[in-house]
Length: 114
Image 1 (cartoon, helix red, strand yellow):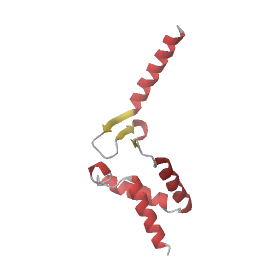
Image 2: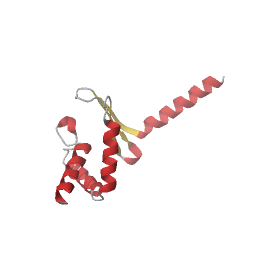
Image 3: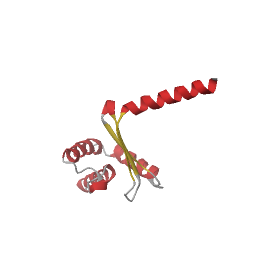
Image 4: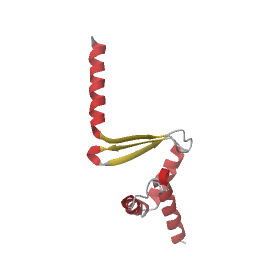
């Protein structure tokens, strides 16, 4: 039947996607529930949080900062690498997350330009 072949394709797609994840964790004992995973082919770590009403606005704000402050992006990459190399880049263990880091850099750049 057409439905069963569609189910088989969906299952195959699910299996292919699972092969690309080298790490998956759900963290519920934090103030903000979090899903963490790593995309294996690129060694790209991704964190997704839920129930955050200001998420899209915060992303838009950071995008505007990135456009208006050219040093923000390279400084963010360098400092994220520095924090990760010392394993102090995870907020749920007391480290500094990306958003806080970017806000700190924005503040530095704003004060520096005065």
